[in-house]
Length: 81
Image (cartoon, rainbow, N blue to C red):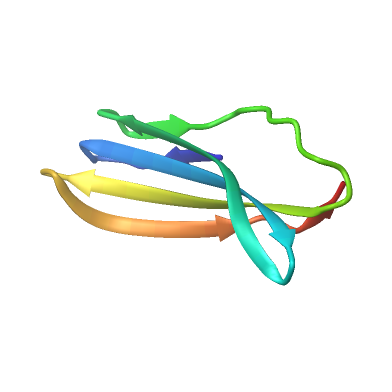
């Protein structure tokens, strides 16, 4: 996930890898990056267990003067491995 904002002090990106098991999505791995710039991105690899459904739930936060001014989220399509 990559976040690009303009005229801001800080951005933060959080990515949660989730596995569907027994009727619930549970986070099995989480990554986070916070930059004192106007962009941030996460590009990671992670080995998963076969036989489950997975998705990536990501959040982007934008700060101006240490105040959260915008937040957005994105959920990927579910993928079976």
